[in-house]
Amino acid sequence: MIEFRTLTRAEVPHIWSIDRSEIIENIYFLENGNLILKPDYFDVRGWPPGEAEQYTPTLLDCFDRGGWFLGALDGDQLVAVTILESKFIGKEKDQLQLKFLHVSNAYRKTGLGKQLFELARTTARERGAKKMYISATPSENTINFYLHRGCEVTPDPDPELFELEPEDIHLVCDVP
Ligand SMILES: CC(C)(COP(=O)(O)OP(=O)(O)OC[C@H]1O[C@@H](n2cnc3c(N)ncnc32)[C@H](O)[C@@H]1OP(=O)(O)O)[C@@H](O)C(=O)NCCC(=O)NCCS
Image (cartoon, rainbow, N blue to C red; front, top):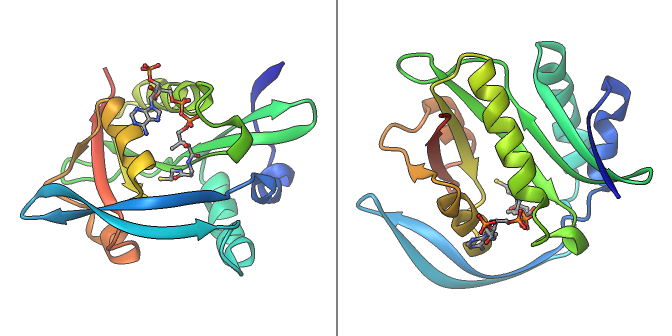
């Protein structure tokens, strides 16, 4: 049985135990504001080298300023995680970023991503946001998942987040 619970600070480095592997065959690009799917093959074997060392301090900073970290556990194994930033962004400062959403390979397509996404959306609303912002990996599966959840390409990407990930697809969704 899968248990959902918020993570402690000490558990943040365990996030890298999630199995990131994925075969990607198509990637989205933005052309004149339209999503265009193009063939591009990646055999993602795991987290990029150095990702854990580089990104853990960023995640701990996010945790320390009140970010929301939710894990899905199968026994004592962390199989999916989502993170909601606490810092408001956007022109109206009314958006919260879904900073992270990953489901271990063997657990995908079983509804876990959807449940974590919707729990993050509820939390964003409870924290006063009008929108949730996602800088999304441009792979076909990921973008189709977010579109299916009602996300749309934002005409106003956050400048800081766009500079960090210019090849991501920057999306927003309502938090009704
Ligand atoms: C993207 C990801 C989080 C989705 O999680 P998941 O657990 O596989 O997705 P779910 O099983 O929860 O999907 C459930 C719902 O989304 C829909 N869905 C899932 N993938 C979809 C796709 N590729 N296209 C369209 N709909 C999709 C399902 O039909 C279902 O919808 P419904 O119940 O409303 O009918 C997961 O595949 C993943 O971790 N991918 C690799 C890492 C990644 O890219 N993370 C995002 C970084 S921004």
